[in-house]
Image 1 (cartoon, rainbow, N blue to C red):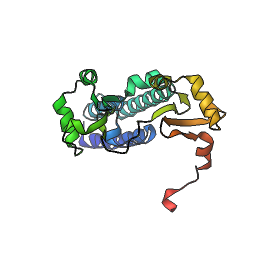
Image 2 (cartoon, rainbow, N blue to C red):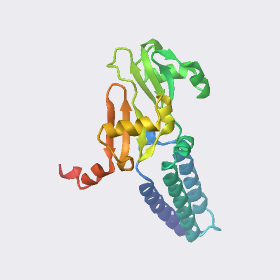
Image 3 (cartoon, helix red, strand yellow):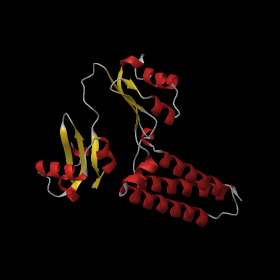
Image 4 (tube, one colour):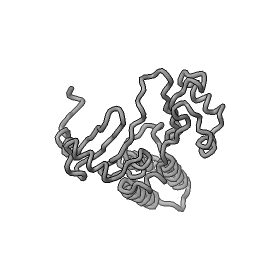
Length: 225
């Protein structure tokens, strides 16, 4: 296989990857979930194997990219509509410290050593576990921390995500679907299917964004401001 074919495969592979990345959404590297990491590895394998294999034609390579991209896109759409599937593929944040209490079982489940935790704290300018009031290990492996002395606000909960009720999240706060619907109606939101997202905290109540509001804002162009 000549250098020209290899170069052409590399070029077309790069274009194909760029198109897939644009279609599958923008994320910073720190926002990458385990599922994103896995499909990225497989994408790189598809390109890597195709570029240097004379038995894999350019058409085969592009077809493989297209099939894999469509498969991932369909999975992401389905996952958005199913709370349990989303949690399995993307994971959920794990509390490591809650109201000043170190949650030993959570450390064990996440295979996290205390010294690793201390290192993560030091990277945030915190040099003692005693300073920590709340600490959450996010799904991407980063650490979110609230110290003692910081203005207190209990972490908010996302009860509606892209139009879907997060029943598991409701249960963690001792709430249910009926309470949510009733509370949203009191806030003036009669149609649940018009709600894009609804965040709630004991201190601040609800923060709600509707699809109607989003449509009204679709013409906003930040580059003209």
